[in-house]
Length: 127
Image (tube, rainbow, N blue to C red; front, top):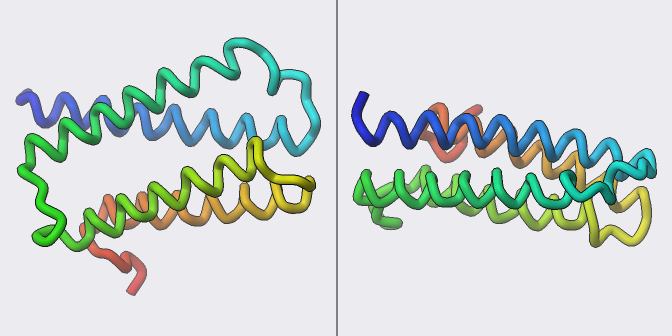
């Protein structure tokens, strides 16, 4: 197995861990669970997401990414940024439970879009 495939497998594993953790934390936040304040709940996502980001940057480097040459990848990156913003609102910055729930659902929809773009290599995977 070459370096690119190893990094890609690490990246996909981190994606699964990251979204699983996000869903779990989102449910906990919406239910007012004390688990949201647990040390592991606060620390582990940073480790997973840092590894996810590092693997993504490595994949970009290994594939000689250029924003003007890979339209779908630029859309994927923009989707990831939107997902992060919505995730922050859902888990921390939302002032009301309704705002948090709306941001949580929107983040999950954006995540679905990002995965669709990644799997198809198309900026509009359903089109």
